[in-house]
Image 1 (cartoon, helix red, strand yellow):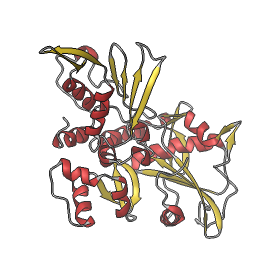
Image 2 (cartoon, one colour):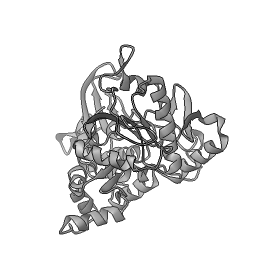
Image 3 (cartoon, rainbow, N blue to C red):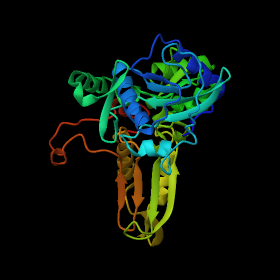
Length: 372
């Protein structure tokens, strides 16, 4: 797996410097020398991801090539880029056995003259991460089954409830220049009808105040999920969100056998909503209408109704479901609009239940920019 932004060895070395300053191994960092057992790596990914959520950390790390007690640089023979489990690449094998599937990243680089490897693991977001059907947690320096520690499990679920998706980091420790390369700040100010700031510092301050960014204690900025999902120039730049792009699929018939066209819309939902709707409306079937003796083409489906369905599809999806994103499928006889997750209100109570909303911060932002 590759990093979404080419931060280079300088960034990786700076991150490793910060990790080595820790007085000892913590629940969200594991130092190893050359232990590359695939099953143990999978268990540690689960344990570290869950423990990072419990401790309020955005990411967890495994570092190969660093001595676990002294944090001395020893180097490692482990090469995750070429490692395999059977005939399958190690990262693909690990990802297949994780649920939900975290967007972890292996990196290899030279550090103080030695080869080291770094695995970055995002925190669990809304439920514990499992490996081969089992949830793990760090207890001291050991990797344990979560079910054997009920109090820790209760605390972990409380942590999930306390931190919504929008407040988690989509990307950590980016420079101010990278913020403007990744985020469409011009659309943010235009949609909110705010004057464009005269300098980067003022623009950064406004984005931070609105919950799109936050400062990172180790330097730079964290782009939060709210900022990325709403105003990313390209969601593919964010590993945890690249599967949340919108797919528009046209079919020639009434089934899914004959797809005639597929478009992947990669912009953030707020910055790109107008362009998205132009694409969707252009993809809808039309019919011939005779008005005042003249023939013209008219829409089969009311544009306003489609717009409302698309907006709600984007905002109320379950972002905790990895590997799936919103899809608009257009058939000869219907339009299917689908997003990941299950309704938070029982289907048989849609009519009389009080309204509830997933992703409250995203919904609020979309209302402010006129999409809801």
